[in-house]
Image 1 (tube, helix red, strand yellow):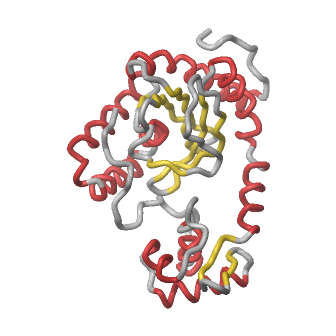
Image 2 (cartoon, helix red, strand yellow):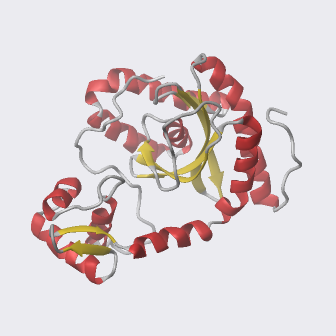
Image 3 (cartoon, one colour):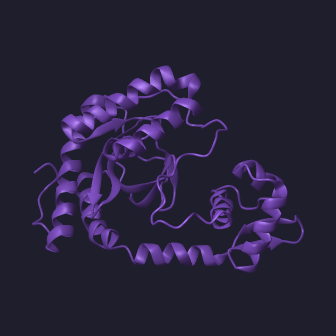
Length: 279
C-alpha cells in the first residue's frame, strides 16, 4: 500500500511527547539515553564520531557521556578500535521490562493461539519517538520468508500498519506533532505518504483497523490497543501474493477478535473461551 522508501533521511530528533511530572528535565540524562538509543542491530561498535553523527551531539559531549556510561556499566569500551558497544547490563534491563509486563504475560498466550490457529504472524508494539518497537512477535507464516521479527526490533511508524494504527489512537497533539515531523523528513515522498496516513487514520476511526504492505508480499493489519491509559498497537500479518485489500479484510476479523479477547482478559483476569479464528 505504499511505495515510500523505508530509509528515513537524516532529520531532527523526533518528538517524544511531554515529560511526566513537574521537575525540569535532566539534560545530561537525556543525552546519555540518546547515546544508548544510537545502537541498533548491525551497529555493534560505535566510535565518538558515529555517536555524534547519530545523536547530533558535540563530540566532546559524546566522549564525556560515553565514559560515564562505561563507568555505569551500560557501555563497554573496545581498546583496539577505541569504540563502544552495549554492555550486558542493558540486556538485563530489557529482561526485567519483559518479565514485569502484566500486558505481555496476559496477551502472549492469546497471541500465540491466534497465530497457530490462523497460521499468521502476530505482533504487539509501542511507539518510541517516530518508530515502533516490538514487545512481542509470534511468527507462523503461511509461506516461508526470510524476514524475522523479534522483540525489541524497530520499524518505521509512518510506513507500517502498527505505526499508523498507533498514530490513529494517539492524542491529537502527539499525532499532529508526529505528522509534522514526517512531513519534514519525508518531503520527497509526502505527496503519496500524507494521503496514506490520513486514509489509515480514517480507516481506524471507521473500521477499527488499518492495513499496510510496506514489505514485498507481506500484508499486515493493525489496531490501537489502549490498556490502562497506555497506548499500544496490535497487528496480524501474512506473507502472501494475494490481493492486498482482500487479504487485509480477511485478517481484520482475526485481529479485532484478538484485541477484544486481550481487553477482556486484562479487565477481568478471566481468559475468554476458545474460538476458531474468525468465529
